[in-house]
Length: 410
Image 1 (cartoon, rainbow, N blue to C red):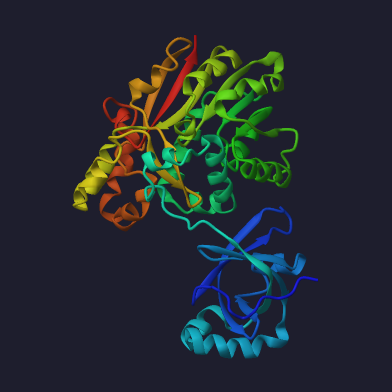
Image 2 (cartoon, one colour):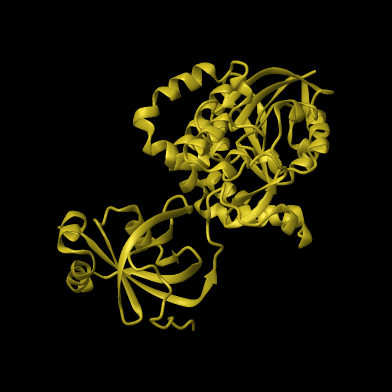
């Protein structure tokens, strides 16, 4: 029998992240909760019994408690008999005003008993906060695909939450899909490269016959398969683990071995070191006259340079000068190669021609600088309209954090 942990938890003072299993979807549901500790037990309060995480606890009493560096498995149960005691302890810890605001009336008390040993977690950092240099990474002799898969495995549980709360990431996703939707037909079987947890694949699958979504991360693929079931898209959304450069392995999943439309968003191809091989294999799948819609991160980003100039941080202005550069994903630092527009297109010129190029975003800063932009958004909001207008025009379509390409198969 698993024994409860000792009271000496390494938890933050005020809050921790709780991961419950969605009672209907089976997918991770993440909330940040306040807590108090009584002996070896922890207690959290839900604002009401209608909170999703409370309902999930009632259905499945197993949860995960996460800090920046540790994850604890725990048994959880609603324990209203302890509510008055816990409310009193909450008032002492957080103040009566906060408790009255958030937990008055129908609040629900949840008892948590951590079990087993904590699991070490890589401390999450921003994408632009990598601490390891490429030379040091290479000196350690790491296997590239394994490291990339491990990084995205680590990020998978919180990936949707992280992306969904980022204004610029959300804007990039919406505009990418707008371009893709104009090309789709209802009878298409569409190929996605670098699907992640399937935020785009789920939406695309509702408009076409099927999406074959590929990714290198086992955890991302597993989550996407569960999401397909939860969203009632079984039969319309297949998730396959395969590196981009080996994409021809999925040819048999398409009618006649051919797809009319393929896509890859948010710089997934920046993490593929065999881009030439990928381009050749993709050409063997996309039918003549078909499309490949993709975005890559550029070596020159005007908004990034201007943002760091305003912050008086010269190193940030030139961070893309040396390639490949290190980025942080799921707490791990991995190499990612950024490209100039011309340098990227060189891999595809033999089999594809350029239909259009859009800066994504053209005038707004990269998504990892989202917090700076959001704080100044009231003053800078006019840029959003200008970004949409100018994003497809030269030279702005080549100066964004990313460029979105629509390539047509010759």
